[in-house]
Length: 437
Image (cartoon, rainbow, N blue to C red; front, side, top):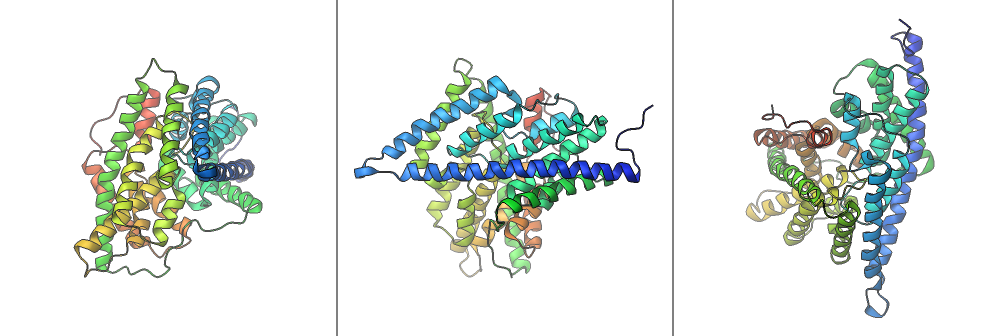
């Protein structure tokens, strides 16, 4: 039997690290361009929404029509050119690692890139991280096959490329590595860990060379983490667990409902969803889009109860509908935004019920992001590290852990399956398992 290209020797290990660095550099460059293009698309959408010459909202009319065309074209491109570029892409990567799906062609990258810009830039409640993960995985798998590596090494580079995509999407190298180890490969062996860390670091280094890094969220650096505060954090987690259970069920329900409209072409359904979301965005801008700026604002200053509850309700309903358009786009960003709203809602209600108890809705918004992520994705370590990296502080680790424990307990108690497991089963036609362990 021929010796594998990356044997468990010192030289094989070093060759794997070098190949991983190449994957990380390529992914970092591509995802950085993707982020920058999305930022420009957001500016265009905001400018059109605000364009009202002589009081007539001509910009809004153009935005709604343009969103219908853009989202419809994105769905059409996915259907015709690369069907596996639909949605987040993380379930597809998981299925490919399991051998349930064949490797995609490189056509997936331009379809995912362009389709993601059109759909996310039009205001759908989708995130950049899903496309980033799948494009990185595609690069890693492609390079591994081009180098003639054995299947195990190809899978390692594929998962490491996915880590590089997530790391670059949020400037969070540790989170990128941990998510892949916790969610995709679900093991911590030396080769996989070293490869994943290498791609994440290299990708983020390339990203930082192209644009100045900055924190996505700003939070107080010295939180109070006494028992009352940990109790509040646990309460946020319990509420987020229930919201996450409902979100997963609604997401799958939207997919079933929209998928059942077989007489309407995919591009027509997607275009209608795009127009509806864009029209709402002209009236309530914070109700659409990935929601990163919304979460940032909630952490900086609290909003009124009516505002927070209304936005939470709208984003809860529209998140799954946006995903059902079957365009490229991820779930992380809208989950984090809804988590911030949920945490802020708990804090605002808590202030009114118990005015003597010191409740900071802004800090609870921060905790809600990780807690809802844990409830929906069921990767609590990634949620804790991700929001900590995005805020540049580890001061909230204890309350974040308490919130995620509460969310996980409720999710398990309600039998809520991790969202990517549910989506992967739909993708591959597998039957839904029994009660969640």
